[in-house]
Image 1: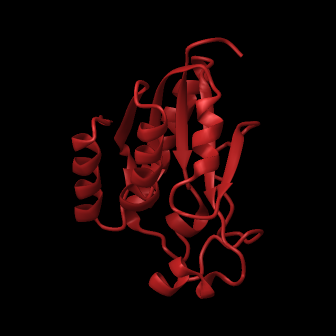
Image 2: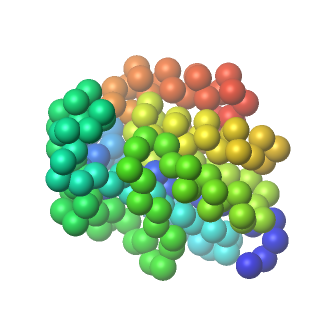
Length: 173
């Protein structure tokens, strides 16, 4: 692997978050922007990594399930799949059982990268969680979030998450 490549993290662009169980019009609207951003990174020969929110059938019995009692992203279902509107190619996919992923942070920490850009869903839950974990793990790596390639549960919570990340020295584009 070449040194000092840029990394694009595509968080949870899954059917259940776009037009499925927890889908929103805002999520549907960013798919084209996400595709363009992925293409930009691939054309520059940079690294693209996807995450996939992953739950089991017992989801409703988990802490998250008790607080958000909507079955979603159950492993192996159509809702769990990354939308077919996005070409994953041979990119790395990390399944994560919770909002933030320690496995993702460990994986990224072993890459020789110059920057991390984060896009995807949902700004106010999984995007912010992973951005904060990565900022703690790699405090000297520039981390940014492209707000035009993210959507939150609501427009207000999306904006609040962007402001919180900005206060933690994550660049908002």
